[in-house]
Length: 112
Image 1 (cartoon, rainbow, N blue to C red):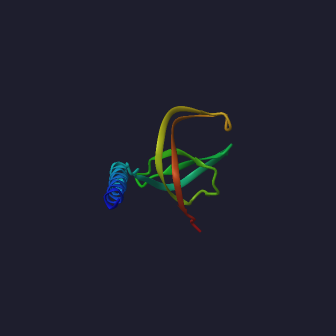
Image 2: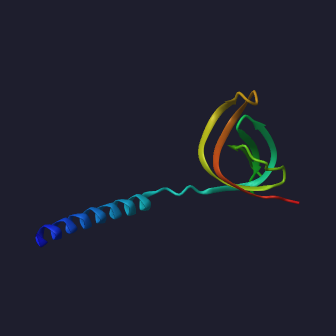
Image 3: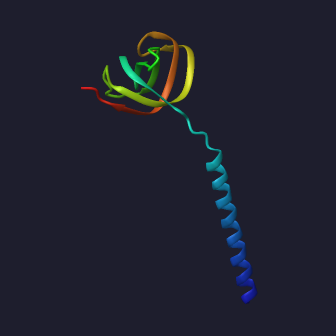
């Protein structure tokens, strides 16, 4: 009887060890997205999104769409790039963006 309990215990430990190894492999292969940042120079709200024109430190600007937010012109933002599209038509704004980045994890610092 003791041998059966020992075999069951060993089998459970083996299954647990396999689960741990799989989660470590998954975490090790996860891709970390870089942050993009800059100063907000203009904003347009449409539907569930806020469209921010952001000026980088190089003085170049680009448009990013994020979940609707209360960011203001002059605020400094940072976010992660999820997707970049060409000739994106916003029905809510009735406007086409030559290039539009979709971002997530928006963080911002209010400028006074």
